Image (cartoon, rainbow, N blue to C red):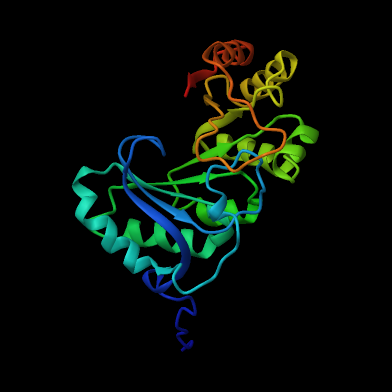
Length: 251
């Protein structure tokens, strides 16, 4: 008779993470009305970051939150929700917590109907996405720039992993949308946007792409100051992206 070994992994609800904040209701963080968990820490240093306080990998006890605590925050709002989204910072830096939260939601009789989405900068490797795949219903990926050199100047990191994540998640059928932040005079040239649209369409001709204009309110200072694109410039940017049947919207 073979010996029975206990599962060495902790119960999902006991797993803790460093949570910067939660929002009970949001209609801009995935499809429908969503509960959003913002995790602390990011591996990108984006010049246009609107949540710079979430960049440091802070590990103080005031950030530490268990999956069980998050579930209890979700329960009162559950009848009015379509799902939950984990964002950041960069959510996938705390992969154990995200996996445990989604696993717990799927196993909970009251919450199991809720979809589980990740809002990510796309830097997670294949092994990490494979861990999330069984419990993740969708992902939203930020593509700061298709040009690697400009991407490095905007974030401090290469875009190679981001592009690979977009391809892989689209292939799995779980890429909900790609978000492209437009910075005036930085990543909005016509030729660059056409190349971006052509590549995205080659991955999925019907891909949903959200064109987001930079807004200075809430962003950290930058020298020289970053300039907000006008409505006309955003419309032009979308037109340059629209080289195929991409599903575009402007925010």
